[in-house]
Image (cartoon, rainbow, N blue to C red; front, top):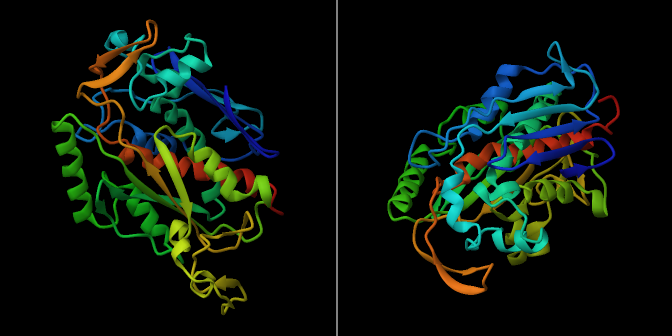
Length: 363
């Protein structure tokens, strides 16, 4: 299994894109937590392919089958295991790539790592299909967090060269987060969202693909959770986020813009509000200092590469004969993975925040 582990929570994902099923095991969840099945389905539906020009025609119900860990809608405290059946597989579409490495995919590196025995159908264990169990795990963790007033929200900040409005780094309301979740195309500025949608459709028509950026915010995280050096919040969030296929970069707070700032511009000055809470006037640090939450919203952005599976002919190598070849990729692929990746980024954040909150006094 591919696993995320810390002292409080373990998440292990298993399966392959065209195997019988994919799944996840969550270990060390607290017992007695109510899990709403309808909310789980709604979260999963946000990741599922849409019936439009922005996603793959592959149709999967993504209905999780829970084997253990939940009884009468409450967590039992024992490992929560769930699997999702793969039903709409077209494995024959991958016959021509069993020996031809797809540019931008992990076919070549996977063949090296697993000595040629890796399952290339639909990307195998490297596939974006494996984000379905990730979303299930993140949805469970999200419900537990929201019961404590902690909400995670994300939106499409950029597709190609079209940009949405950024979150206010000093605070986003619960209502704003819920509103984004109910949008078919989650942008703050709907006109920008329409332009992005049309740009994705245009790329698909030209047998190409697009990348983009997702911005995520986590509100009401109390100050003082996390650890320095290797167990920091930034470390763990980055670890989970990079488990999402196609992710190529992450930045927190002001991110790479800090390289252009003076210290006096980058530093977030502290103050005490009317309720006796220590806050900062700005949030260039993205809610994390020294790997530990400051009490300000946790804000980060994730860059996704264009979908590597495109219909245009591409030059590659026949790995069995070590000779140059031309590849035409068949199959069903998203022209842009970003819209479906929004709940995946939220899920990754939920898992990390809960894993650290379980150490918080009186959780």
